[in-house]
Length: 363
Image 1 (cartoon, rainbow, N blue to C red):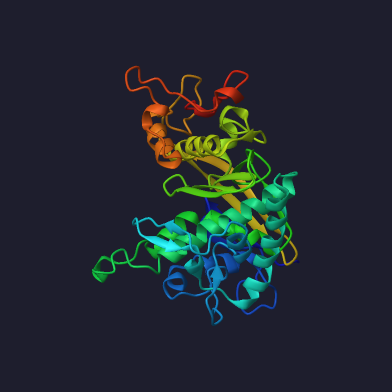
Image 2 (cartoon, rainbow, N blue to C red):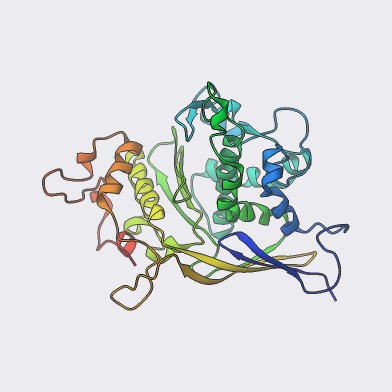
């Protein structure tokens, strides 16, 4: 009988592990099991001890893995630009590195980077393989930023306050790590809402210059404007695809301005933070293949909507959206929410040619 590993998960967090045969696939074997590597990578002790962020093994010497690869920093002149961390401090992109072993760095991570570099230079997303490559890459960047924050003090003047990010919080993003790890071997995705267990929307930008990034830790979403291509990723198992397969107002793939892209990012971030459900998974693995299978949607609350279905997103919040949009676009909140009527407004009017999708609705 062929060895296999089964894992039951709730939104990427392992809650039970079992074997379907009597062998030992997770230790003492020459077979490389992705699920074993995944669990090592998200192990709290490995994160705290600065092991390889991608496999949990001994890291190589040197600066480690650049969370934002050198080719990207060169392409958008980011080396001396700075990223704002969760505690409000700034870090140069060139200094944003995490511990990594040579095998991961030069192996499957390099393969992901090569594919994504081609997509970004092309400026368009052509089919499911590109979506998967971008999902893996965005997962790598999201996890990399968070892992870096587990190594940086919240306040260098008062080390007793601990680090910016607690190591055990990385477990909340375990599904990102699993999406990343799926690049190690052929993977079958069995998802409830789309082809893959994440939401990803892309847009053409009307300029080939410029770089922007925004994140929402609560909603587990990240958006990047990469020259002529804008990408928004949500670690939500694909729930936002139910609210609108082509994102807010069904505009995916259209050409937008940088400001319009930032508004779209704010809308996705807001929706992500209103998520009211998670998923259970039944993943399995053989020496040759990995299967990531969503089983059910599990609402956090017991709210029943008018149609009788369970709520998976809290009702849309225009004030929350206006605050996020103002922060990302650097425009006043009144641009997105009329201060007198409290009616929501948009920079996307010229692109909205039909009735808006259900994206902003509570279902």
